[in-house]
Amino acid sequence: MYYKGIYHNFYQYNPHCALWCWGDITWGHSVSTDLVNWIQLEPVIEPDNPSDIDGCWTGSATILSGGQPVILYTGGSRDKCQVQNLVHPKNPSDPYLREWTKTGNNPVIQPVVPGLNRSQFRDPTTGWIGPDGLWRIAVGAELKSYTAALLYKSEDFLSWTRVDHPLYSQNLSNIVECNMWECLDFFAVLPGNNTGLDMSAAILRGTKHALKMSVGYFDKYLIGVYDLKRDAFVPDTIVDDCRLWLKIDYGNFYASKSFFDSKKGRRIIWGWSKEADCRSDDVAKGWAGIHTIPRTIWLDSNGKQLLQWPVDEIESLRTNEINHQGLELNKGDMFEINGVDTFQADVEIYFELTSINAAEPFNSSSLLDPEKHCCEAGASVHGGIGPFGLVILASNNMDEHTVVHFRVYKSQQKYMILMCSDLRRSSIRPSRYTPAYGGFFELDLAKERKISLRTLIDRSAVESFGGGGRVCITSRVYPAVLADVGRAHMYAFNNGSATVRVPQLSAWTMRKAQVNVEKGWSAI
Image 1 (cartoon, helix red, strand yellow):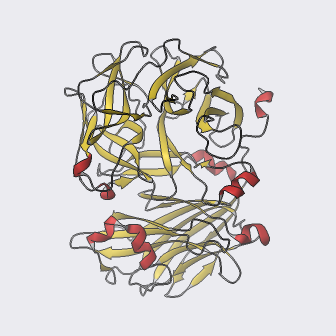
Image 2 (cartoon, rainbow, N blue to C red; image 1 turned 45 degrees about the vertical axis):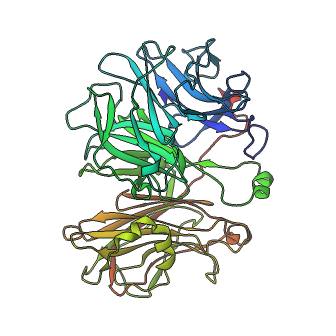
């Protein structure tokens, strides 16, 4: 949240070791003035009450009408019962909010709903005010044969009453590849407008709403409307197969949370990217898990898809800019990008299609498993239009390399772009998780022949944004070249039959941000 000139980032944190241990999870706390450089403060919530003794789990911060922040979070009890607890700052005048106090009547919400699985009731959303002036939140839950975003109302944020219907729910027996929704998020968006909306402000004409849930291994979302009369979310399209739901990120990205940035009038989202190496490595380096770079998130002009882009502030780390214009990539071409630190880089590249006639036919069944399609149609497999994209973190002999690339397909009425982040040859080190991630997006190539790609490389973290942020893929890679040689190669390439032009390629070395410097809290 943003409070008194400071950005606050709260996160689940084990202060004892770099492993996930039940009962040890606290809420860590870091602050920033620019979303880039962060100072770590002391933990704000620790498991010391019966209502959270088994861990302080996911929750949300809300700024109340008087300007005071509060936090609702899920606590685990010894009997594996999940409840919702409330904390408030000891000193609201402190912009750093260093100390918090648990409310005396915790837990404020208990799992007393008929048929509710008491161990599957968690992750309250940020609160919003309805037309009746009452606060509302949603909590993820599993009840008998369905999963739901249960809706609760309150006048004072202390005493909560469950509404007799959920904000939204779906019968699990009718959904393919779906289970309980956790880490819920619910926010308003305007089609084609990248301005953020405060959920407690009046709803503007044309406003849509996004309901995001973490399910399976991904963060997925539905776009629809918030029906004020019914006090319910109504999706624009109901798709029973959960595999076809749109994703916030198609890679190693989970448990995301958004907030309204009142400083700049935007909505910002970020997520957790877990390690994909081995536990012994985590213990050795003393940490595990990162937050992705904060992203601005908004709704596309067609009202169907969320778009994301790194916050502008991240560009303050750019240095040593290099540029290339007017490149032409024929089948088999690889153009090396020199002059930047390939381990810490920001690369923006536009690919222009010289022809769209060579697009291969699109098979809609590929939408069910784009990762499999990325494996079968990897960068070494020649295509009509594509694969083309970036090869990054490549060793001298190419034994190690990661590929971010596109392929273009033609269906009866539209063009579908497959974006892949292929990690299968990212490391020669054993015991690493090296999948091929992928996602599809639509593009009107009859009007616009350019496909953009922006890739941020921060050593083991690779975040890629395709088609102006239509598909985002976060990857974690651990090449031996990173540790052994200290230098890697980066290329723009094309392995498709159709020639691809590159009208603009820009790249920067990224300076190191100051993130959670040990004992940084003593400076403020």
